[in-house]
Length: 218
Image (cartoon, rainbow, N blue to C red):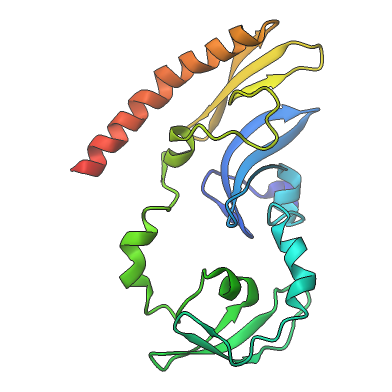
């Protein structure tokens, strides 16, 4: 059943947002993801489809701590916690809260503590402009912030985006664009692989970003 699930850029699974599919490793598919906590990670596709992996690992570290915390009476933004909701197997712990506007809502523990949820929803419009500064934008299956950034994945060992060490000691270059991964070739020298990747960025990323900025300014 899990194998029939289609994954795509921008899809949200748990705390993870899928950015792009990366070259196979030992025949297995992987996706580069951004977690809500800000960390980036590469996750095996089958683990995403089955729900086995839903964060970079931050949730697993938080769970024991959550169980020792009583949030009743505490304030989070416009919310005051009234009571803990009955726990359900496989669900994160949650709390019933009263908003300053008078509405009552149910919020997950980690969303309250991380500041993701600060009201029943009435605060959303007031914060929309500020939230847009850190939002992830996808155009034609491509994450604008990802290709504009020079940040490397924690799993990267070459020091260059899109360049991977092969089992035979050589290097492989690839680039993800508009929901697809393009193989740029295999090389014995690291410099050649890096050169191929940079050329592809100039041909694909640069025009794409320029067009995006022009439309955003209109």
